[in-house]
View 1 (cartoon, rainbow, N blue to C red):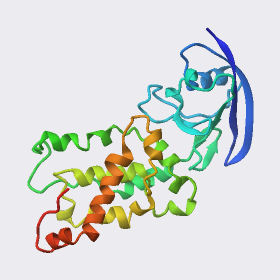
View 2 (view 1 turned 120 degrees about the vertical axis):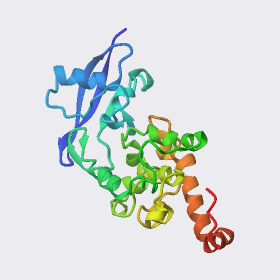
View 3 (view 1 turned 135 degrees about the horizontal axis):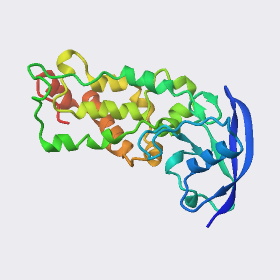
View 4 (view 1 turned 90 degrees about the horizontal axis):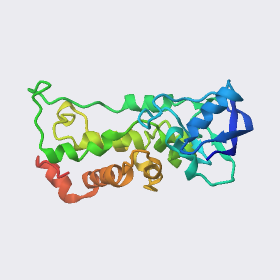
Length: 256
């Protein structure tokens, strides 16, 4: 059964603009991106929006629906309040390019700041061996599709532009946590302390574990509980637990 819905979409360039209202026919089972495409085809051919796979796996169609960061292709119209306008805005944490498209280059800059996996000496690719439990521990984090919804909803990024230089955001602190858990990562042997880097270079202390990043993750990754809080605990142990400090002094391997 079809019905008509009102869409209020932010239109503009470079942060300057306003809302434009449209009336559009909705078919049963459609998602918000379907309606955006219909508007492009019938009323607003110049409406700018990013999308690619339309299957919730590329992260391209990130925007805000009624003020909440979402993937347009995974937001069913049936889940939105009936009889109320659907309000679409670009990700507010990042500079506006045009309409629903934002400049997310901040995230790619932060990705380059996280040191990649450090291969262990004496092992060639294909010779790595790990226990299954060590494979499973960080597996959840590898489901990330880099939609950057967690980055957008994090108030340390969204509400405080001055934090961006020092704070990597939840997506990339999760990457640090994943590498810190990797039993074959040889960063320490190569002079890189990932836990110190998390605190000093990537701004782990800016996170106050409100769990807003977890709430918007379309892959249902428990970013706060399984990545950020344990990483904070390991950093705190390293710096403030006297037994861990003493063990490090006499050469004992710290417990993860």
